[in-house]
Image (cartoon, rainbow, N blue to C red):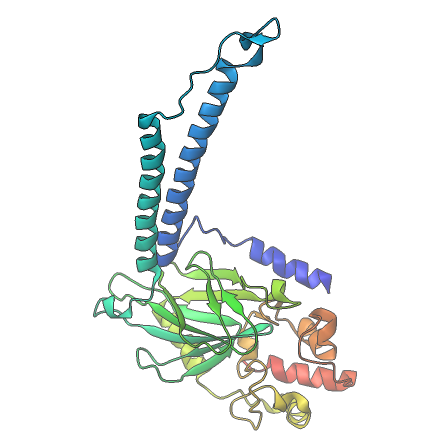
Length: 343
């Protein structure tokens, strides 16, 4: 199992997760704030160290002592009005300027749906954090009505100059505190149990895969609470959305696996649309095989990995809420074949 984790980690490391290469307006604002604060701190540090080294060199011990007694003393500045004014006004001015920059950044990263251009086609997504996976409810464009429900991997459309596509996330938690963080798209926003008003937004013109990480310790598998956001062209996104709205594929060749899935405890936790499986405790599996990863984006979705997961999830992700059911190898094969048909 460690080999699987290393493979997934290696895949993530190949992607850019730096906050210094933003791909969305909120992330750009955060980078600007980081640079300004770092530059101010570096400037202050340079002054302090400059004065320190100047004092060490100019008033070093060998030049001050003669026969064991100091011959000269540094100039005494106690009570100097100009210096008192300088070291009071200068820090105050720095703090004031930093406050202005922070307020400006907060204004830019805050949800401002009403300030989007009229041509903007907003996509609302409800994000629900679970131990340890993500649930996404993609609502109908701009209408705040329930739409597609999926898990772990989020697909969104890219913006264009002609068609801005801001994404608004409403963040909730089903259990403990989590924090949603895609460094290149936006800053961290917490998901808090019982609080449904935490929101964030981003928009990007760069298609591709963006990865992130839960940034709030949420239990044993916090390190494997990963995030994957696929930014696609409008046509690709609409094609993905159209497929997700369909009921699950009903392939007669995997009927044995479907029958076992529907008669075992799987149906108590998982939903597969178009079947009696309507559990809401675990991830929605209606189009599981259309995803690249599973188990909180931790493991590449392959038949072999999925088979190992069904046999004993605890061996792969210790502490997850799915137990091993002691199924025979034949039943595991049949269920795996059925789940891999759900594209």
